[in-house]
Image 1 (cartoon, rainbow, N blue to C red):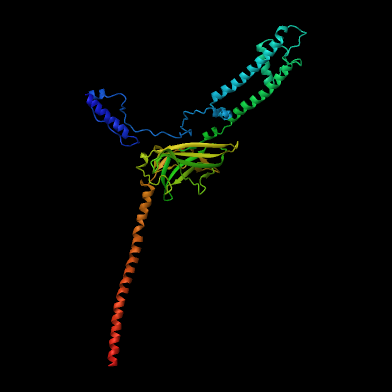
Image 2 (cartoon, rainbow, N blue to C red; image 1 turned 135 degrees about the horizontal axis):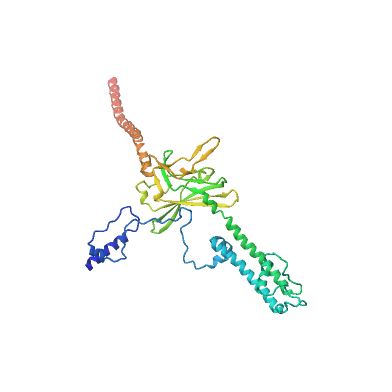
Length: 423
């Protein structure tokens, strides 16, 4: 039984080493007796399902990449403003409150120390004594005076006197530092509130990409739309193919990025995004999908990342929206349902049908195979013309070979006639 368990363990481990890539064929485990199955080690997985494709960019546009083992963390502090803006809202609000609170407490402590050192606490009820700050009788009142000074509230109850030069200097320092803190923190909050990331929430992509024929050519298509009435100015679209590759020298490049032409040379990548548009990529010899057929597409481990960029009309800030499509989200032989209809005096967009598709007749061959079939369809005509030309050339050469013999015979006949006439 131990030998049986060891042999089955080696078999299963060998299968797991061989299955490094995704395969659509399910691998079935051999049926073992119940006792042999119970004796197998627990670390051997009994679930032999397909490996799930990991996204590089999620459907909501967020990049699924985490930076680990970053040792030079001081670089984040050199750009503290961007670091604060990139923080989540709860941490940003916490830092906002803590900065102001610590600043008020720090200067309140200094005001209280000045009053304590000068002896103002011992002459609170003495009308002949001129304190540094009137009506400052403890740490709480010093803290309140610090808040009034930095926020320029000025209730008028606690006032600094001209008999305290150290207090005047501290007042100047707190006023300048308070202005700097206000500018920094309010600026962070303003930039975070006005970030165009939320504008990208109203830029939508179709849940699926489709492959079908358009103008006699095989094309990959997806749809984009803008839900707002305020438009995206200078909108442009880009697409990237994310797929690991191995070079001819044996170098493995994980998540290699390849450009997908969506109209860069013709200007079709620059959009007037007033209504939903279908973005088309022609699958030609320069396309990375040139040799991919319908049967081969589910076996590919690839991801298409689409990027829509433009300026927000209301703020003038640059906005970017992203989405992605994996192989299971690419439908072969489908088209998008039209969403634009003409009403009485205007066009109406039905966003209920934005993601809907319908099936259409599309060849299951790759674009390369379709091009080869088209070239073969033209072959008989060209073959017949060339063959006729060759036959005609061969006949001419045969006639030229026969002509010298006939000419010699004719010349011989003429010579004989001349001899007879002379005789």
